[in-house]
Length: 442
Image (tube, rainbow, N blue to C red):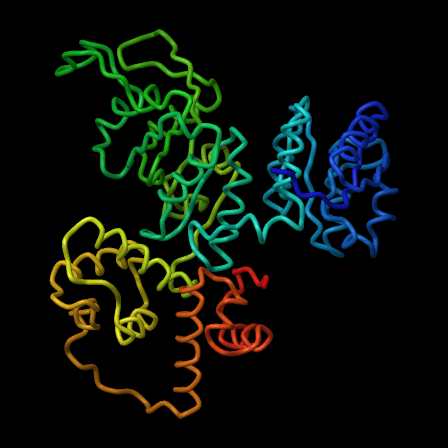
């Protein structure tokens, strides 16, 4: 499949490397503007940054740092920056990604790898690349985009979000889109394993290492091989084990309990937590936090992304009904209304649990409100009566969310379903605070 092409700004002071990159990018069909100094790039980007689909920027320049170029130009435009960094610049490159840069590549690199990074970073690509695998809201499409960009790196990833927001699903998605997809994905729930057993489960033990160790046990770190070691609820890891995990990251090897033989660690670490481990008030080592959060991801609760509620519900329902015999084929409009009004304190996990219970008990083809929310059977004393305008707005908002769910977030298709123009739908979505994360192509 041919790659997307675009207008690229290249900031590289090395004449040999710069000329080589320009020639290859031109052969690939890109239009290229080459600068050798930061001040040249800033003059060209000032007022014209929007003319570029991507800026490829070296960090070390003769007159200034690439970070200065990025920070000065980002105030005028959202042009994506891809940084080229030497090994000693990796910490700075990670910091730049947190500030909004789309990617970085470590020198020396293969040209094919750079071309792949360019293809995923061009400004014209994101709308087409985001498939709505994790959700149709703008925030989840952004998470998907970030995870795809993180997939080619080896640095640790830290996924944060409330309980039930789908952190493990995101970790598995990262595994699937990376070149480690055929290697193991080993998930460890640090909160579910007793603290006195967690070290043995994580690093393994030799026969006779302690009372009851009757045979050799290979831990999750060893069984992960070249794949991903997923540490869920990392905030619950005991302090003593946090120190050993930090040493694992820094040294790249570990020891089984009862052994002095180092075992190389080849897997990539991906962590998840619902706790604010960045805060100094938590019992989490700050040096470990900074190591684990090299590439961060934050998931919003579903009450803050209502576009995903019905979309998730339909996918959960399809999985549930496929796995068992049931007359249930869908969700009634009244039940959907109640789902959109519910606060979902348990997030997507609560949503799935309610659907599983409702399907197990229902004898009809459509799930009704009381089957999904039996805890709301007792009528609540009514509050102030809605005005007709408020009721109309609420109904319109629900219909827009339904249409977005049915069309996987495609704005044009949703507008056609609702019988309004695309412009009218955009205006109403903005008015009702609905994220415009879907595609708007015809």
